[in-house]
Image (cartoon, rainbow, N blue to C red; front, side, top):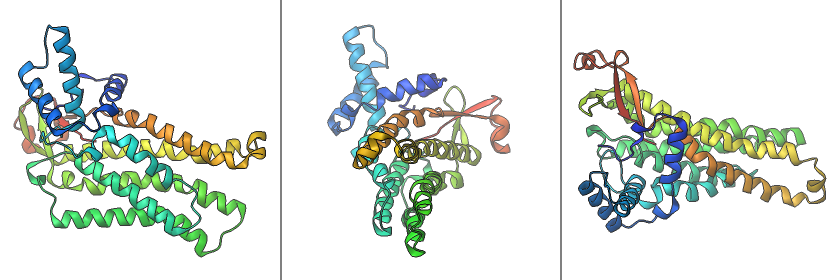
Length: 316
């Protein structure tokens, strides 16, 4: 049974409120002992109680477990890759990655840090099947190659600008403000696709409404990965628009003309706030427990059930 109970939250608003609760930073550094105690409390409480005090304890235990345990395996996720850690750790990385760097090396450095953290978070919060219990050396090399490729592409606007000495104001604005927006948005989706490619290759489990496993579906795996890629694009895409929009909005304002050095901290702070606000939004775009029509899965699985809809866990 999945710990992230969003199968009961069919609306975007319901899922958004759920993630606001789960992303509580107080659960970031929950110890292994606290997590195990919370897990044991849930197992013995049956997720419900009439006693109000005990009910509050159960709610807190559920939040700790949802924020700290992998919903498929029940294993404890390393603290830095737990959902509540995503905001405090990824925010400075995305802000730094979106800065208008002067050189290619600094752009590459921050891109590889951001893409590496993204890859680690995606890997440890993705789906898990019997074929994916361990990351093989081949998959490790693929991850390193994917992160390196993404970092190189992310730094490419600065390489082109410096390589061909594009110093005019129009070219500087295009390569430092405008081009990074579609580039980093595309790379965020590509990161998810590379990291979770095994889910498409091996498939993921699909279940009926009673929770019975019907089988492993490649089509469901593809749908889950695509949904996660879209949600990550929304997160990073909206955030990456902020520096460009603020540049055009404030560059001619009287305050900025009098205080030109104020534009950078305003831009960085706004970018950080937008990224933080977009995290629960992006997690809520698609349900964690997605649906797939019986007609859309493999023929051999269709023969195993008569239900029109099947369910799968999407991951983050």
